[in-house]
Image 1 (cartoon, rainbow, N blue to C red):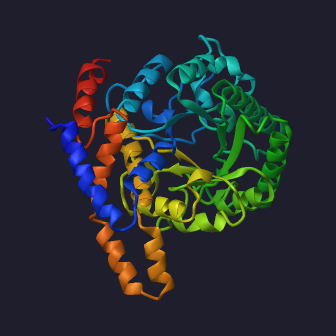
Image 2: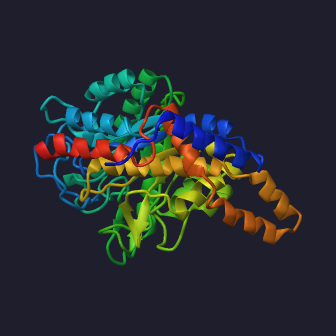
Image 3: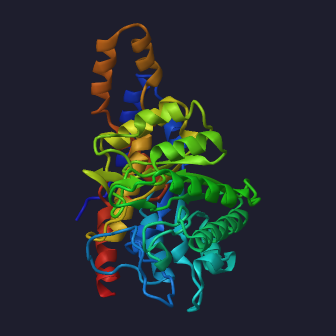
Length: 425
């Protein structure tokens, strides 16, 4: 259906683009080399609508995450999810990681409490990781559990429930450390909790104090930072926590600035018209490393599939302009059950990598010279012209170098997989 360009066509188009960018002082070969070194962490929960593979002895409850849509063929076990992930990875150029939640443990049919999870329950994931050469990242799962029924976990007033979740988080850090040792580089652990209230709590202070104490307890356990790095993630509000979120932006900003843990910025976790690109330079004045959750909010934190919009462009322009790209861990966080899930992975990841490439191809020094010389019109004019520069031709060369379909050609493979695998499940 979609015409595939020949190697000669891709190279010819690339040579023309290379010359055009060179006139602005941009080395496209160097940009591609840099892009090759930037990993993006693919999130497992896109493949199965955040269901996980937990074996329960009680009714699942607790809420916290909601995926919408009923497109056929979601992965229903770990081998199926790995198969789908491999298909997605075959259509995405460049370096990738894979991001797991604790509910994706493989326990051989046994009920294992979340406070009892251990590295052996992720042994098959680690074997797969090593075989594929794809490093793993990890997340504790503080939702969809009876002990999260009232919307509180690490900040819970009940000592026993709070201790359960503290122990769960400690287990997850040990698992992450084992993953890091297995892959020879740090596993990034992101700590997000859904704690909060639906309507006008009187006491907003006590849960936050309990959360501070819980985090101190969790992070006091010695875990080798060479194999496990921690990040804390805020949220503006959620379903069931519309009025009050314990782990707000201010809370975790304060925590991260006074502790060694990274801050995680999720693109959908702020006010509906608020973007995060302007926050980056502020944070890097005080922190050496950051975790990003790349997503797309429509109205708010709806976790739509990432596309190459202005939010994505501006995000990566700020990372490249500030020299922060190598200090930023880039992970995806969206889930859409209404469309082909493998397609969602590929669309979002390719868009993210295109955003990085677009930033790497910017003649930043020339723009800064205009700005410093007071040549505002010249700067604005060049920024506008760059919007129609042939980034796509450079992207196609990146795909060619990585033996991945260029342009729209990958869509044919997605269609074939959809008809031959997904629709037959």
